Length: 99
Image (cartoon, rainbow, N blue to C red; front, side):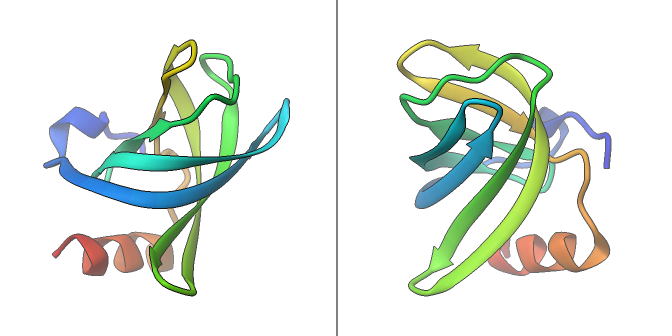
């Protein structure tokens, strides 16, 4: 999926995440979420263009693993992530959660 996340409605959230990038595994929170991407509030460092594996806890004990490309990074704040590799099942799970 190569849509810009801003073309999809963003939903404010406060979901726990674990994410893995070239600098290791980190924790954070997803502040907004859409079918196209999200913003991850975290102290972990990433580089623009980096591919990240993100696990979102949609509800207690229910995790959704997604992959995406970092589109922006703010030191000490977090990063924007474009869901550029969604499978049909991942998109369906995300769509169900957002509806």
